Image 1 (cartoon, rainbow, N blue to C red):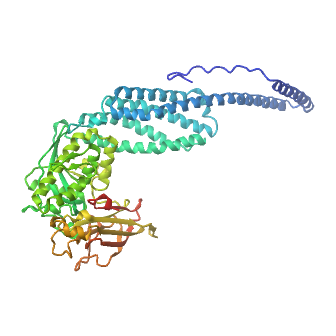
Image 2: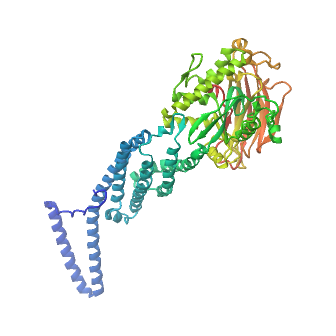
Length: 635
């Protein structure tokens, strides 16, 4: 095996003693060859052909050369096998460092990280050197198999570049720093993000070129190599996607976190899912957080619901589709499912109230807060109740109203107190959370609409969209999304008992290239008559349209996918409020159905319909729906 930096001379094979059988075989062959040669001379003399004589001599020479090549090939084959086994051992040693390297990165153990990277560098360099020796170069001329040898050499070169020109600089830039240091004492470590961003930015061209080389390798002929390539290329594709996504995040995060003393201010809206709105729940509490060089400070949270004298501009399509006063009452601002518009309108409301400019709007709900508490630990509320990652949503969205009955002021005070303590607990202990689990919480909450973000800056907004947290309506016909949204019209906190489901059947391809799906959506009122009769009025509401205390009244919306349509809509008997039919409209180019439904305790309103996606669709039909107060009631 070569050293890591040079290839020693290959020892010459020593002649081995011949066995008696080999000697006999060789002697027999020599006698036969001599007899054949003598006969050839005799015949040659008879024919008198000098040209034929020279041709036979050339033929014999060629046979002799082929014999030498075969013998040498056998020796080379054995040597190549031994070399390949060494490469395999070195590759195994590299793979064995994966977990150690990961632990070193997350734990910030400089010595452990340095040792692990050192092993990887040593072994990868050795592999690359070994597969580029004359032995391997010669093997590339072998028909068919030679292409596989060249693939191995390409892998060696790509791995060498990835390790020396990407892994080493990136790990050196963050050596000694923990990823957990990203959050500490209520602040974000902007310097760490900038260090990672700078080193990754320098390494990105190397990473992209190396990964592209690996992904472009042809299918191998040797089964073992074919298996290795198939195992390597899939995660390589994922890595390439992660790198492409990570770089713009790292580039923009520092400025979003107030780097270089440039303070950023964000409006935070707490959505109360016990009173549903299309994007989540009643926007009951509004406040700001300011960030300067990663240091976060929280302003006072207030309610601006129903405040007079406010008015923002909405479109005629929004008026027709949503049919509510979202332009004059902040309480209705998120009755549209398009959070991009919610963010713009909420910012305008905030400015009109005289609270100043904001750089973005972030909406969260108690379920998202509960998920964070599961990672950071719980706390004790002012009344002695333990609040943690298992009950925060229930405390905030249900328990508070039962605890204080119809005393709205006491409810608001307790709600604000618990929310404030929860925020403090999260910010002070976020650095203790497992970074992987934390990222999963953010990703999960963005996907199910419990964390929504709108940014005033166009580049930052594009990044939010890329991360799937924008909550905007999908208008790309290649990505069909069906929307099923709910706005409470009971004027109560009865949405805690709302349960929904949407099932999509197998798509049927149509002659024009479109696809049609049979879909069923339901709204179920899970409250019992006993609970409804004993519940505070604040929970069940006092609407004169309620048929009994358990009655739940909701606006239901269906949004067709971009370039598609909804047809054959039917609502179960008794599901619609008397005097209200099914209205149709259009918003952002999407077909919209709106209806006013009601359900007594235990009742279900069922909608059946067909959804046809555009012929341009490249993905199956997806469903986006309003996030409920209780995750367990969503299907």
